[in-house]
Amino acid sequence: MSDPNTIATIIGFVFFGVSEILPFLPIRGNGMLQSILEGLKGSCGSVDKDVELAQQLINHKPTIANVVTTMTTNDVIHNCFKNILDNQNVIPYINLLCNNQELQTIFHSLNSNPALLNNIKNVIKSVSDG
Image (cartoon, rainbow, N blue to C red):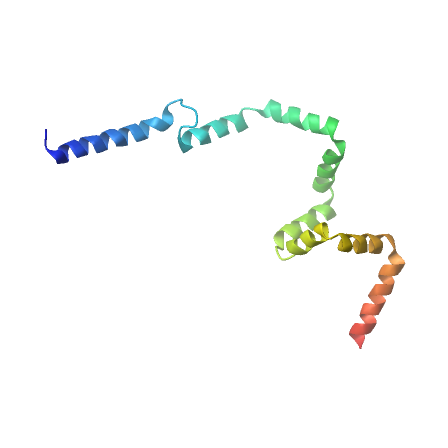
């Protein structure tokens, strides 16, 4: 029993046993398995809390609730978001539009003045036609 190989083997088995039992002990922050179980328990067991949070959102921030409702019920907007998410090449341009004040001003000017937009389309068409 005093053979070093036997002692090393026994110590290895003890560490292995402890490492297998440790995640199941109710010690906070004890291993990945326990974190997953706590997360599942918290997400599945709180349906009433989810409904309560949704009700608070509707009562306190109705504009966000309206945006979510519009996005889910309006097929055109839903398809636009789906196309944007499916086409990853468009996202940098949308990000640029969101962060660049000059592009936002141009966008709002074109959106609010259809005659200006038509004039620009005609100029682009005449230039492209040669």
